[in-house]
Length: 160
Image 1 (cartoon, rainbow, N blue to C red):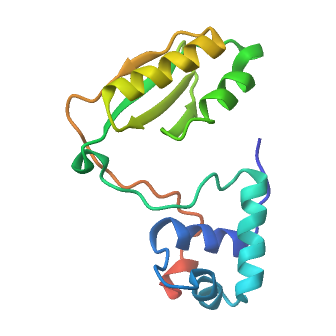
Image 2: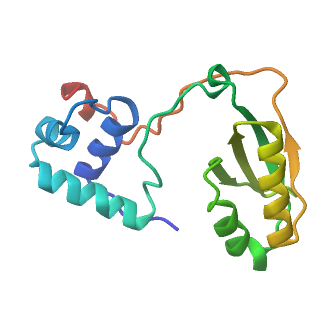
């Protein structure tokens, strides 16, 4: 499902993806950068969250350096089970990404936890709740890239 996003929302999305201010009132500064009040900025962010455009706002840590484990997971989910499966998977705090793909394995998600045992326990719990087998594909070599979904082209150059 897609939602119309106006230029102010696009500018906010660009800022919070790559340059989120670590200050007491970040939405005040974000609003200032694009000509909005703090209240207007917060209202737009909350609207984007309600639409499901923003799922989570938070810090990203290098989990491996903290001793945590992660795995890519894949599942083959029938069309009639898709919404239910995705909703169950997304209830787990260890799920960091969840994607739909055109493939036999059509749902892919990453799962992170403090240990392999905790990951195995939660993935087995998902399997029990859904009846769907989950393929676990832990990384053998880690490639860390930054992925930002650029919402504006030239407009953001002036506000950074």
